[in-house]
Image (cartoon, rainbow, N blue to C red; front, top):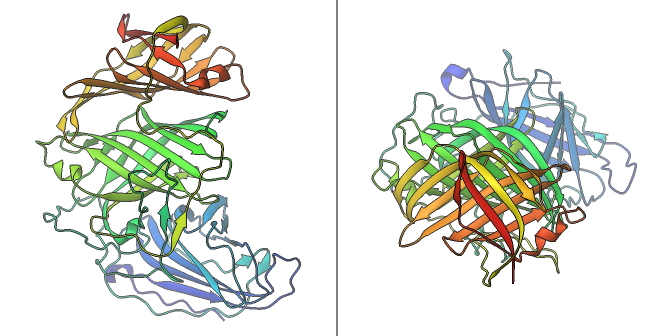
Length: 499
């Protein structure tokens, strides 16, 4: 028997739940002998919807789980929290994270997701299976929530600190009523990063949805460059080719050339740095840098965004907020999806997930590398082509000036080309600090991630190359750099051994 209760969209609410239960025979130590699933469409808007899912183990205890189902109307999962998701056509697979894999008999695990839909209906799935064992039985509705239909969100947003009244964007769906809620099955965890990569929050990165939504961004994903295993872990460089963002108080575009620098450690933990330049609808440029982490097996990275907006702009409020959010790579839509919430006043709370880096492995740096000494032998020289300068202007740390990197060549012990993307993110204050990020592609098809950073006269470069490759010698961090000098279409830079 199947019953679906649905209020009309014009009334502002759509809530659908499906509960499936049944029994079966366990086939292995990791198979469930029975399961029940509650699938609730919590909100719906043109082209998208949010859903919460709870799976209850009715069989033997299991130490890890995998829930599968099939959509029947072309729906796609675009963002998921409290689990790891993959989708092939209509088939969806959600696996546990490191902290919610154990299910004793009668206990439940919960996760939520945002999805897209483009047909006339958004039917609920009915073919759920836990570790390959079907969850079968009757389907009954749950009660429908009250209040307006919201934007895609893990939980309705909660105002955290006094802010000026928001100005609604005509392209943004109406925001859900700010009513505190608890996700099914418990509270989202606070993530405690390893002390080497705290993202400025050593007390833990709070669940973003406890705060108030600031923006949602869809960055257009360009080439994914897999550097391989470097001295720090497995490095991927994801190019950003542009994109859009919307929010209650700001909206606009992401400029091409952004970099998403993803590092997977040998224990499966993810560490992330992402740098983008935002252009708001009124033409303001904003420097947007995020630090993030994720436990092993979790495809949703918890990020701590940092904004530098001009002090004289209407967006200067971004300079003083405390933010948290999520980053998800969606290969189905070829986007990197970012959500940012203002979590000012939100304190870390149970449950806590402590991340620990593998012992004996070097840690990547957030700030510029330090180094002293004199220049020795030349290693290689670059001729870098540059785009037009982008001036953010005076902000909270000084005056930010961004010079896009558009290409170039290298000669010497490293011969090849400089890929378009990244920039020199200059900060001008009492001194001028350069911070250039970009990627080299050698003539023998090896990728090298470069960061050249520091004040004029004291630039210290760091490199990440494949640890088993021909350029692994660059990973030693024993180099110095010249200051940029004039060259056709840009600048020339030479790297030296440090002695």
